[in-house]
Length: 334
Length: 253
Image (cartoon, rainbow over all chains, first blue to last red; front, side):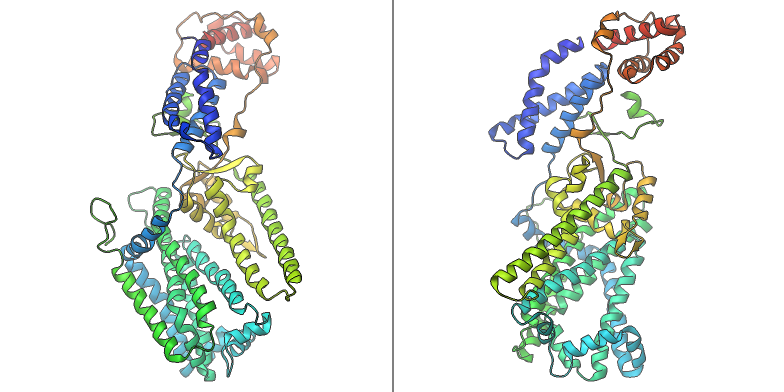
């Protein structure tokens, strides 16, 4: 067949697909979208014919463009949905954590050990605590959790008391999730970035608590932190877990080429990261609107706070274990 | 096109990807330079949005009669977080490109050629911290990202490797058609079959000669055509016309 005949014979189909693609790309296609797969397969065939018969660059590029655009419309990824979110919370996230439970335990240790060491240091070697904090930070701790103070008062002094809880919420979202996301990304540097951040945050937070232990106002910060700590600290540690997962993909590619091993580690770390970031977000809500309610009595605070810790423990151990969610075959990761 | 798909010897950056339907499509990955332009533009846009929001929040506070730094600070911090971490993720997940990239006709796709979803958008953009390293005064130098781009065939920074994505020229912008022969020059040529059977690659070389001839000076055309003296038996201008004739015959008939 001559090139001209080929073009003439198929021009209508190409134009039809072209117009349909324009509508699909603007998400304005109606029922005629049903024609797209058939038209797309035909144009795929046309392209391979045109390439084989050397109908020239111009035609091949036009058909290639149609195939690329059609391919992108037909293989568009699904958008977010509520059932998807529910499945993620109920099944995907806890299973992903259990699949990498060794890394999770390592990350927990990397954070809590320095944290505990710093509090112990407050009693035996206080200069360790002082070496971790700048004078300004110590002043801030005094202002937030010192004698007769509370974080709301600290923030109220700076931002006024109207909307103080909302200000705190905004601050915790911006500050804490930022730390979590950074902790994740740095993991790609052969896990060192995440390990460093975990230990550093453990030391820093431990020093802040230790400082208040030293000054004798420890109960102020514990009663404040107990409510949201299970979300916040665990969430950050989960982000660190995801980061270490990335680094391990780089360090131990297994049988894959390293570039593919990185991508595989990314796919595996993604649910862990999203879960961790979600936890830190929830923590910001709890911290801004619950922990900061000064009138809540200590028994209520500690009951709820410990209850949240138990909840997270059970969640990571049990959630999604016997859930099949309509999938055939053995659930992975448990 | 065949040599492009099999050959190790590539002189362009086109990447062919075989799709499920069995054909190969060509993607043109974008190098570090256009992406750096896009990055700078995006940075300006993000700063602009922040400044605009700051002004709006201040004005809003003034209209409501409350002091800025009350509700406004909380909103401002949330907005800052969204723009700092969410700008790229949202743009790329929803439109497949950011505003800066769009201006330079770039978009992000998976290495398989399909549009990226939320997961890939999150992964590739969280790695900006690392790709931007080393940082100096809040400004990324991007050396790690550039090194990674240079070392990978598809110009992938580390975030791209992780998310299995590649930044390509969007199809609307990259079709480059070299000027072909003018109709007048075309009319002078006589399509005629080559005297001997040519292999596919040889045929292709002739067709490419025709399609690129418009780019070259007369001298260059003759220089190239002289290499084909064994085929045409001619040199100089007549050789060029002979080859163009063969190419026309091969392609158009």
